[in-house]
Image (cartoon, rainbow, N blue to C red; front, top):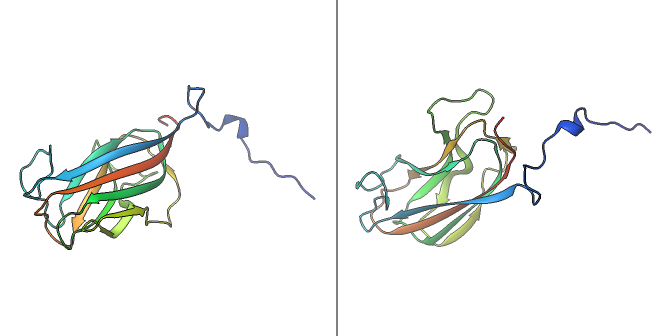
Length: 161
């Protein structure tokens, strides 16, 4: 029986410069006003169908594993969303392309109180080569009421490549 060893095992980075590890959960929040606009946003217009909302920044070197969306105050009836990431500098990466539905494919219910694990189950963990916005793309209906979504992204901070 053969024994096979992956090359470069001693060079694989598993932990950062801290003795307690580098696994983390990053929390991002989207809250809308009574008019359906992003609370503390740079626009007072309601979120419309197809609008993209930047709700946070994932740091370079973040190896993405999973996400949990928690809607604790339902948004407007019929609203749905997809959630992914886009690079802060606006320039795509050939090794790790931007993905607007990396965490949640279109159809994430935002119009009901719900806890939903990442629905895009066919993707492998990736390490971001640079800072990226967490983006929510609205669908289904325009927003016209208060709503609250918390997104918990599980990742390992391995350091910028």
